Length: 168
Image (cartoon, rainbow, N blue to C red; front, side):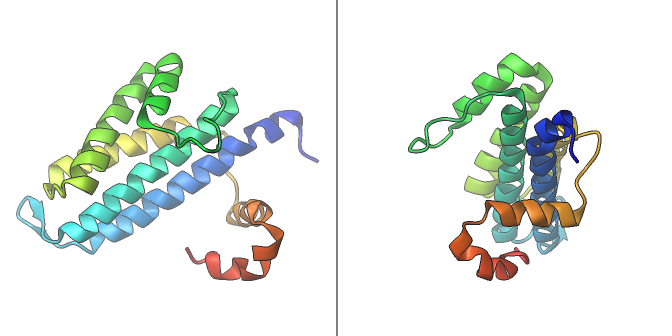
């Protein structure tokens, strides 16, 4: 039986697991681009990896905000970077600085502009890992617990297909 505290930490635990999964996928994608001197050769993999890492940070922040009781924007309105920045400014200044770096380096420079400089991209990944590390719960979920929680969020009509999505 879960305690109240464990139930309250569940969004944080799930967000941490998801953010970590995104970062692992981003690292694997980045490895596909060979390094030549100080640059990645193929910007396609760099763009995809940067976008995936950026989304991993947003997943982490969503869980953090849910844990802190910060409401999401209405369903019809997409959460903007300003939503994340303004709420994070009230919670943690260091994380806000890291988010600014992640947004600039990974989202704008890496994903949109295709910057291939290894040091620049690595600095963005370091900031992303910094944010995710700051939301790390005391006790992480096991892979089976994560799988169970993901299945609970899948609509009933899609559950027979959920095994196909488990690989993603």
